[in-house]
Image 1 (cartoon, one colour):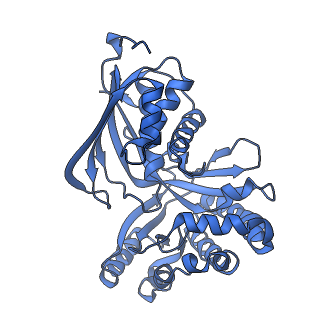
Image 2 (tube, helix red, strand yellow):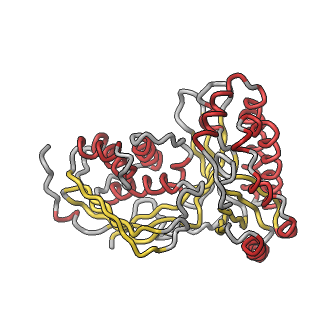
Image 3 (cartoon, rainbow, N blue to C red):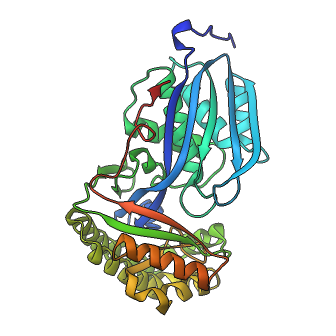
Length: 373
């Protein structure tokens, strides 16, 4: 492959960023919709935590990051990948399970295939406070970050759904079984309604919150096997009316109410719907993967009397299990009090603030196309 000469006007750095993503309602409804039994509905939002990078055009594909610990804190270590800008090399990197940057290589490979205006790129992830492997889609965030970097550096002016598609296909290229809801972190901290239907494009609608909803999520410091959960549920879906009901009409009913509650900024209603949603999940979904979805740590925290006075309700996150819990606090002061009590009672657990509001700060770091430095 002939290496393209980088124009002088494209040699400056661009700044891009992406937050994590958390599913408020509708987990599992994305893949369930592919069976054609019922549409899938979910509501996701970006996290307060994320990653920021600088990028510029280059003759190769290079990406470097300061490696955080599992909680997103600086570790003092850095890691880099650099390879030729050609499809064979990028594809090999994307398929290499030992390659730390395989998701990034997958997105770069998709850009090379799909967008003629791109060449190589040099991306430096300079800041990251997003916890890894905690149900907040750190892999999707870095894929969106890389897609946005190409968009900014080469002035592609891609629409959000196009960036989401490139990020999704790039991650799937690695063999990941990620769903399409993860890439909604492109919208920053604006909540998003996603509608899934068999053989149709995903419908994406931002939700403009009518007030401030003070939330938080908690790493339960437990263990779960997401692959096992998905295998169990998907294997039983077509033969289980209860599973179809939970991920179909019951989920739609909850999501429709949650959509209206977020529009109204009604934190109390959002919290009560989370508690109701968890009850439906435990009753209709949990028995289909009993070992993984028994979730003793999750239910211990959801039932923790010490925070009852501070929260409107809560539920599990993502595929559920003993991974991550989320709560709606009654106020910012109540959130602070709840976090302190959880950390004292469960010292191994880690808490993270999550704010949904009409004025969720997008700002410079969360801009869609990045800014020149």
